[in-house]
Length: 349
Ligand SMILES: NC(=O)c1ccc[n+]([C@@H]2O[C@H](COP(=O)([O-])OP(=O)(O)OC[C@H]3O[C@@H](n4cnc5c(N)ncnc54)[C@H](O)[C@@H]3O)[C@@H](O)[C@H]2O)c1
Ligand SMILES: [Zn+2]
Image (tube, rainbow, N blue to C red; front, side, top):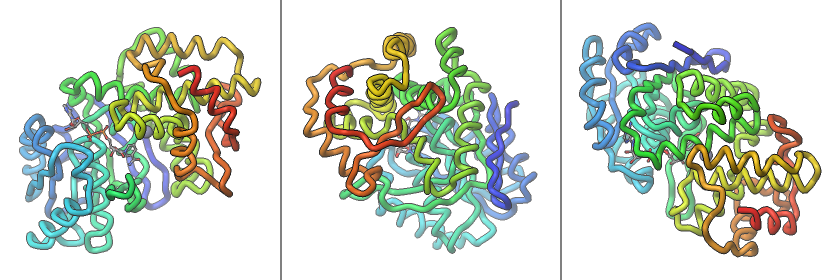
């Protein structure tokens, strides 16, 4: 079983990855010396699939309660957060108790934020069930809720005590959600692990080993720059153009698809600057097709509109738009980019 360690001194934790790990949750939590009560936060769909199994396992040692939120991004809200917090208060959860998030990034982000602020912080455990959550959102300690004025604007850095990624849960995941995770996996390959792209090109299998490689990359970056003062920003590769594509398509282009398209755009800018060889774009397009990721948006893009959205993004420093580009595959660099470069990048997607 490939374990990954996120090194943050006393707050270090393991990411355990493997098939059937939900049934070992109780053992893993006991090994961390966690006592007291556990609140499983999940949604109806995921809890319907895996909740009873997890609950039965945890009940061997713990008193377990369950709080279910609605399914979808709109439930990652302040209102739902408040309801979770009130549940914790009414049921007298204490500092030594634990919140366990069972689900995708929505559940994980919301439950993590609840754990961060309830009694100024109680134990938190992630049990990610989507590919995106297993390779990305469950690791690194970003927690948040959305507001009608913007996504992920209200949150906290709050690390889990443990991440348990049971790869068996991915079997029930719809293809669209798998693509979301694949977009992020390709991102890891491009910013840090060219070999990972070669492996995916040969055999597009989602193995525990592949997940571990991704978590290891994220973990190294997070250990070096937990609060995104500098290096952690390279994880935003593909996301600057990507976010704008999500916005203009009213989220019909999903996050993973948008990241993949954004990655192609950023790769093209890197090619135009002479950082990457010309053939890179073609190679990436072939890989994306193989993985079922898009290579074109299928719509006419309005560069001015997209540029405006990109400028309102968090990654603008001194009013200059910055993007993560590639000096080579596996060598990201954060640079200011010009409008003309964006126009040419959009022309290839
Ligand atoms: N904290 C971070 O570092 C970070 C990083 C990336 C994304 N995010 C956040 O993560 C969220 C997206 O996460 P997501 O892509 O996991 O979406 P999600 O949590 O909405 O899950 C996607 C869908 O899959 C369903 N699902 C979950 N597990 C399943 C399973 N095993 N089988 C069948 N269906 C299952 C969910 O009910 C949902 O309908 C966004 O809110 C984003 O902002 C956070
Ligand atoms: Zn992402």
